[in-house]
Image (cartoon, rainbow, N blue to C red; front, side):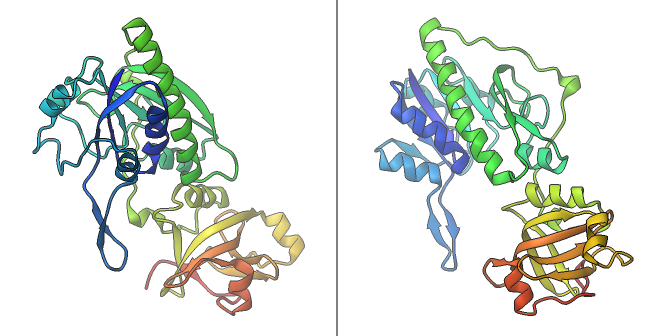
Length: 323
């Protein structure tokens, strides 16, 4: 089967790798333009561009598929199907209809739950222990197309957004290949309409959502840390000035804190103890959080114990909003 592949970030790589290794033939790769990165702001090609170029595939990089229509280019490629994995742009109707089987999308949720740009992050913010992957037919409405295949994915206690996305990407790639193999064998792709009444939405994550509300429960703060790693990170300001991004933490319940002699009758956001060999504890709305790894603003990642040993924090210090 001839395939047009549309994708941009690392999430799309497993699907592209599986297609390259399969009997299917990629006739065109569409990815976002190079973006300036690093201190020198030099243009850097997307992960999909780099992999496609390494395999000698034909690549185009439209700034906007709405302002620069590529549907005729897709038709001329003779492709049977368009595969989309985190391309990063909404596709217009002519492009959706440019191939025989239309556009198949890999979406990391069990649709119709978590339609939108941040399904994994929103799922983790809710404290869910399962998510899923959906192979769907793209339509003009966001993530509302018919469902072709679905698979549930377990979320482990130490998972964060990066690890869940990576897992979903690999599972989605396997699912996609099964769908394409079956379509080539039978000449059809079966699908089931979504129930719009059951739809929930996952809007893009905003940077300010990383600010930790210490009056939340310990569990809710842990959800935020896992959901917003690696971007924008779960962060707070020490003394209203020094930004600390939490990288690893674990709950310390009030009864455990009492046994360890940790201060309890203090305002949420207060540093309540320094634990040599571990890090430091912070009062939350329901207990305490033991911070075991963090990134101070302008510095590299540090273990909590190294931060404590360097006198980066003291008992009674306050974490909270910027001054």
